[in-house]
Length: 418
Image (cartoon, rainbow, N blue to C red; front, side, top):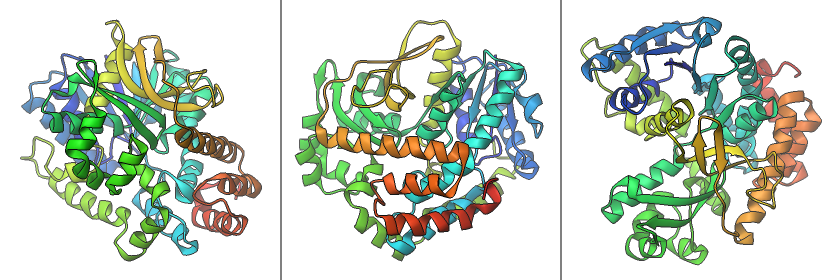
């Protein structure tokens, strides 16, 4: 079994390697290829990855290359974890929207749109190369904004699913609070990527969400950085990203007075790369947990195993086509819900009727994502403006007009039409 990781030079990669090594019985990878244009990073992460495999007794072969076509040739699955423009572009995404009082963030709002415009054309080019060399290969997208990127892949007919670590992270947190194993916890997780809610938490057939809020509400609220009364009033547990919508102005104030997340990550990446250069290091360092992406490797292994091994159906939260699952959204919208995953793909499981408070915001953001994808595919100032005007975190023509010019100015080198 051959897997290819596009963006293999990411500082995330040792987390993925650790998961492949620990869970080799679930996903018996024989060849793993890390590809990235950054040779300096590959020269550090490739040897570290081989040392991790060796320490954990994994017999698979790990190679590195800057040749994308060679990397994806014959691959059974291709994992995408690239960041076009690197942390420097992310820093811009988190900064310039603040000038007009809008959230600066890499996956939502104006910053999220900028990332989509930079990323979608590159991802589609990669996917076309995969299809030319191995049309049966699955593409697993972890590249943000996952919903828009996955929608672009599916619109072009690629065998693709999107993956996010929010659901698996919450599953692990709830299991710890309830003193049960993660496999005993099943989430009714619904929404769009980075716009999701847990509407029920099942353990042994019982919905324990009310008990979670009653017994552990303060801790959950603190982790989400939202007031507990908001959660108890909603009766659901939103993902962390809902804070950008439910506490927008407070988030903007915080962002204006604190170091950006991009600056923090850049600092951590510098430290991580120094650690990775140590020839004695043969495990992922503790610092990597602060980098983000917790449990990403376990989610990726589970998904790849379901897609590549004929072992029946597995229940997993993925980003895939709506196809009537949420009747208030178009069929070609990409939603994030539990699905039955097999070698044929993902079939979303039925979802109970939802509160209009949730459906209204989902419908609004889905409309934005549709316009964002049009801007990413076809370019043009008017398309960018329309997408920004549609976004619920912007919504005013004066803001959309200014942010359009700012977005183009800060991303001109990545936009062929600008």
